[in-house]
Image (cartoon, rainbow, N blue to C red; front, side, top):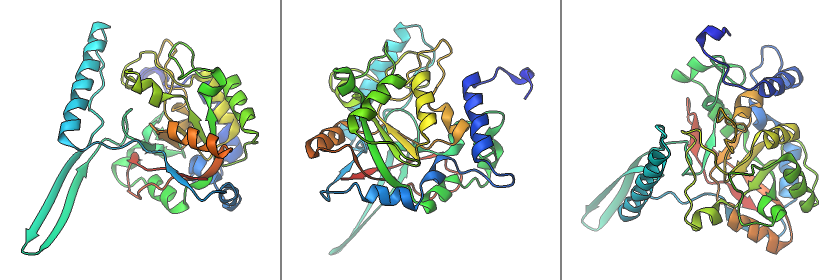
Length: 328
């Protein structure tokens, strides 16, 4: 692509990872479906083998629809915007993490029925959602390669992923436990060495197609009154940086679930892990609630389980709200 249309949105190391992926995984004439394609029968059976107690825990943050709670969320969002204005930033977060919900109730004599219409933002830093391949692109393409314009008509990645079945072994990495802190800070992005240390603490060896569940302490961070910044502005925030992103790419996970996102600790404010959506077709589940899962697995004396992430099969969808379940 010519530099005349603008600077390269991707760092050279992302291009290098993409080139290696293309050479090793792409077949001419066959569209690559990204990391989800690594989840096969062996990966699923490995996940099933991790279920010992028959318990299940949701990794989804609650989606707020109650008017009084939404009013409080809007106030918090306004306060966040004011903080950003004081920093001289023009890009500010939008939305309050709720959904537009129209509930329709009909009462006819002794009969009643209910229905609703929902509108939501499938991305951002509030609701738990799964990013599709048509979320981060470069050179007018998504991963695959899929022309970006296809999403205007009939891009079917989310349908393919839903029908493929995203169920595999999940391995939870507890970064705050490795650091001996409550949560990850913006000043110290998660490194490859820390991810290695957290993996070593599990006693598990990662295998092709496993789900990486990376806990960074966001629930504690927000409970302490901190606001996690939107990715719309290039400000530092807690999360995983370039070093950690390279580590993730090297492990060939089927998907990654996390609470904090990219650390945005570079001068350009690049999204290091999100860039892997284009580079290797990485399936990401953002804004997971992982603190309760980390505690439950610790109590059970394990770090693994069967991770099920079943997206809705919506043609042209760039992402969907999702309720990932971990069975252990």
